[in-house]
Length: 359
Image (cartoon, rainbow, N blue to C red):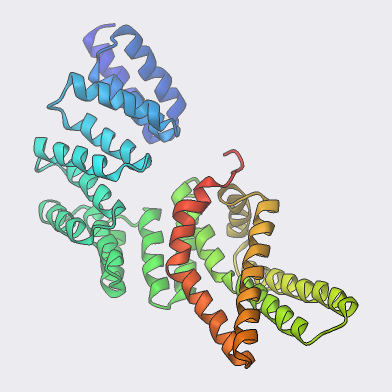
C-alpha cells in the first residue's frame, strides 16, 4: 500500500467511526496494522474503536504502545487518559491528560481531555480553571460553554449552569447532550415540566444517542421515585399496625394486603407518569430501562429490601419512643439520607455490578 493510499484508508476509517460504523473502522485499522505494526495513527485509531466497543483494557494497551512509539504526540496520551478514566484510575488519567496539554498547550482536544478528568474527579476548582481557559481560547465553540455549565453544576449554581447550557445550545442547536444538560439544570431549579420536555427533545433530535436515552430514563425514574417512598410508608404502616395486633392469623392476612396496596401505589404512579410521555418517547423509555437497570427479579428484591428497611426503621422508632409521629420523622430522615448521598453511592458502586441485558 502506498503512502497516499494509507492516508486515504486512515481518513475513511475515521469517517466510519464518526457515522457509528465502529466495527468496520476497527477492521480497517487492524488491516493497516497488519501491514505496518508500528503505525501510530493506526494504533490510535484502533484504540479509539476498542474503547467505543467497551474493550477498554485492550484499548489501553494499544494507547500505551502508541505512547512508547510517539511520546511527543498528544493523541496517544489523550486516548490513554480516556481509557484510564473508564477503568476508574482517575489519578493516572489526569497525569496523562496533563502530559497531552504540555505537548499541545493551546490545543482544544488536550484541554478538553484534562477537563473531563477533573470533572470526573469532581475537582470543581481545577475544572473551572480549565473550562475558563477553553472559553478564552475557543469562545465560539459550543463545548466550551458546555464545560462552564458542567462546572456550575458541580458547584450547584443552577442559574449559571442554565445560562451556560443555553449558550452551548445556541451555538450547537442539534446537539442532544446540550439539551439534556440544560434539562438537568432546569430540573434542579424546580422547572420539572420544562426539563422533561427538553429530555424528550434530546431523544427526538438523535434517537440513536445512548447518552440522551439514558438521561431520559433517569429523568423519568426520578419522577416515579414517589412510588418507592409509597412502598416504604406502606411497610412502615405494616410494622406499626402489627405492634397492635396479638392474633398471628390476623397479622398474616393483613401484611399481604398492605404489600399489595404498596405495589398498586407504585404501579399507579409509574403508569400515570408514563402516560404523560408521547408514544415514541415512552417506547424508548421502556426499552432503554430494560437495558440500563437490573433484571426484573433483582429489581423486585431491591424494592422489597428498601420497603423492609423503611418499615423496620419506622417500627423501631415508634416502638422506642412511643408516638408514631416520631416514627414518621425517622422515616423522613432515612429518605433524606437515601437521597443525599445514598443515590450517588448506589449509582457509582452498586448499579455497575448488576447484571445487564445485552445491548
